[in-house]
Figure 1 (cartoon, rainbow, N blue to C red):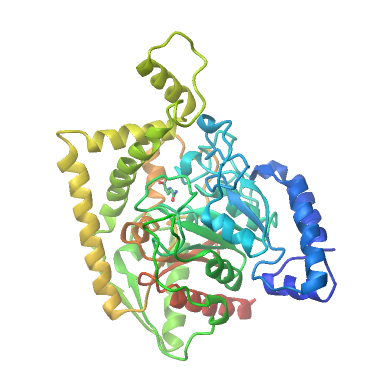
Figure 2: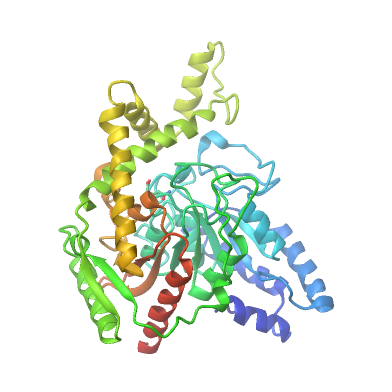
Length: 481
Ligand code: GLN
């Protein structure tokens, strides 16, 4: 029977003739059907995935494997465009809408030989922390189906967790890749702002958004990153920094790292005691391995969530104004309305509760009379956070923290209290506010049986150190098992 461990093992098995791309696609199609109750996929591209697999099997017979993601089966969060395929941001307002072009990340996957297996469920317009805000219904955590998978990229996380694809792409504006990776026990990587082109990613908050990667292990995340990162003429905010060969440089140089942790994060009253204990153990084992691990103060910690929600809702209210039933989106069926009432009816019917809440909040913080008190203030806090971050990285290689303050909660547990839900993001929004890369790696299991992760952060565009340290920590954990 087909089994997947890593992309490199899969490539070896293809080369030895032990498996084929067609066998792999069939395996995943069956697995997706069997696990339909998890609600991870909105649509599966069964026939075309099989056709592509067949083509790749024929190509390999002639040429061998000469692209990085040959036959790799990838799922896309339903906010990433794929030409001639529907994309909906898990919203009613975009039903039906078909992408007229592919996102740069999608195109790079295809050029590297990947097989796109389907589009994955998420919170509407990537707004949420539990995947309960989807027009297609909630996604369930495969480890315990009474619990949420995290959000907003919940479907993409569960697809990797439950073996319904090899890797998937999500988007991370304030933790939407790392938080569900933490809840599901897998790797979730958010690169630096601008590392991967945002062209073809449906925007939530453009100065925060970044495509991220879900994988079972660090080498797989690294090979996907090096394939899809880099300059792009279609995104003026993408970086021209050269893309290192991450996957072939995962062994860290033999040196003692300087690692910081935030005292305020580890002593936060909302932090689950088991998570605190496990992270303290990791700090001690890093110290006994010869690394210099020290506390640093993060006085602004309690301001990050409000700052994030002021700025992202402001950007969202602007980004989502295009969904008006004229430029984009399905139009209300009500007849005889003037233009303004038609907009109102379309948007009231098409958007879900959470998206409406954020558009209202964003419009409010941008409105005359409140702009300085909220928007300008939040920009100032963002600036302070950037300065503080630069200072930390002049002295340290890496910062570690919990990814989330508690493991996956029960479905419905936080839906009535948006503030509670927002607070689940306290440790993940900071890297997006300052544009640095961050990753969640699945190192721990809670006594309630749920997995949780460690978050690592490095200076902007230092994904290499991030991946090397993550690889070392994950390898250590494998030894323990
Ligand atoms: N949970 C956060 C929010 O709801 C993060 C979302 C994301 O990263 N897309 O805004």
